[in-house]
Length: 259
Length: 287
Image 1 (cartoon, rainbow over the protein chains, first blue to last red):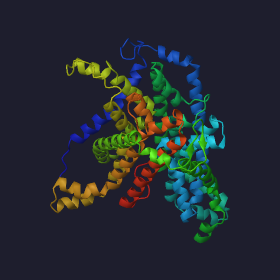
Image 2 (cartoon, rainbow over the protein chains, first blue to last red):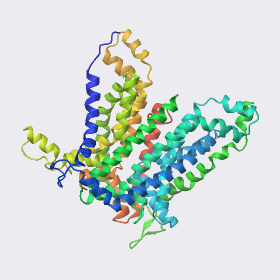
Image 3 (cartoon, rainbow over the protein chains, first blue to last red):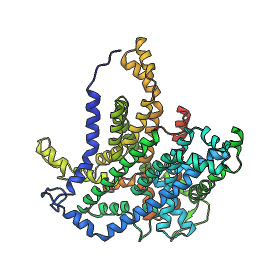
Image 4 (cartoon, helix red, strand yellow):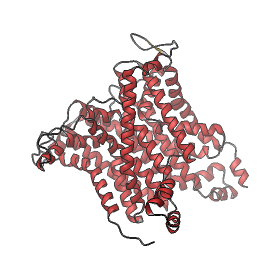
């Protein structure tokens, strides 16, 4: 079969990819717009960035978001990893059911998760704020870590921890010294994904956030709904920059994961 | 030796935190949702512990059933468009050289990791009356008046497709990537035309990826209420908007729970069908 180098696929990929970047590039360009009108172009300026850095509310929201994403991805890293390691030893039907339920948070629509948390936390009488946000976010962060670590464990050469055991290491020691370093790249990329998902979440946060603890996406959402200020463009551009850094980091980790 | 390692008592103990968390914070809330959907709403505040089926009967009320149907319609349109755009993309991408595959993967993933609201905000600037699109079209002489696309159905549809396209691309890509091309070549050698080889071999082999992409776009598109809000200006109600409004404005929690139970059942049905058809347990390309 002779292969003719067709240009159509390349043009198609290029055009679609370019289209997906149009809204993002527009946000970046408009963040440097001197005009107050969001549609007219008034020359280049850094005013919105200056204004942004003086906006204490937004920084509070940003701080909340980062703290929340750190805490929930860490908790998910511990619970998800330990869970994947432990579940690898349980093969019962019950374990299968638990696995199914534990991954539900990323299978069902976010709105349902948000609503059930809101109702359940009210039932428990929890105060809405950082604690409820943390519990909600941890629940959908765990599946990401769990699934990546599980895949990594399946591909693991079982003879390595066995060799450690034969040489007299305790079960825990064999895990700590041999298995853990081997699955570490998986744990880290799972946690990174969980971190990004937590930082990005609007839907669940809206339902479990308190009146005083607002996360950044929730803040942006209310601002876009009530009236648009070009400050958002500047903020969005900074968030884009953060995303690029995270994706690059995970790319580096991914390379390690494959090698 | 192997046996001793596997049967090491207590190794499964590591899963205890996961089991506890799942039981209390996933299963607990889901069960409570189910119970709540059968309770009666207190006329003034909260819920009364009285069994009723009214909440489910209420869904059949034309107003709410209409919302459910139009939400389904939007979800179907979104999924269909996403498939038409995303399948060729995933397919072509999987046929690139290793180097370009990696580069394209990065480029696809960056918007995916970017805050969904940030991306929707870009569309607002484009669609706004006298916004970028209007100026472009009027400048080119295609139209002579602003289209006022913001807060219309097409705007919501574009936003949905845009938000969910990466799921479809990654699902299709991962199944095309691991496809055995020698089967296609065999079909060609046996005289099948290119189109026939595609439909009888490639399409079948990539079906798990397609179905996974369909599920990953269809299910979320029932609930993405913020896209309908931001690009639809509150004129278009999804099941997600309805649930949110029942919780925050109407304060009818049992009814919101009933709506959510139906949506959960729908989701479970889709996942079950997926497993039935493809015999694959995990969705393709999800991670």
